[in-house]
Image (cartoon, rainbow, N blue to C red; front, side, top):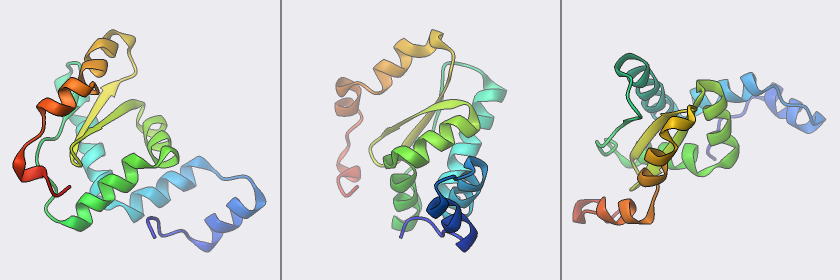
Length: 130
């Protein structure tokens, strides 16, 4: 199971209305490594500025890698995180998370980051297991 869903949050879902803040809190507590990674990148982007902030260090273990995969592979989780933090998220190689501002001036940079070419250029033998 990817999220630790409280009975109250499950009841919300069963009724049809889910408070997004409650969902985001569920993600925060269920996927702490992914949450911290994204939070720290958002903070880095705000402090340093620039077109994006990214992480190139592989996760410390498979549990952490799994959290990143769950957070960024789920449209619902990824979308909620993007709305919560006010950024666009990009993902490469099972661990390279990047945050981009919503500003359209970085659209070309985001397109390059998420291109097939850059995916291929960012391959390495040590990442073959992800």
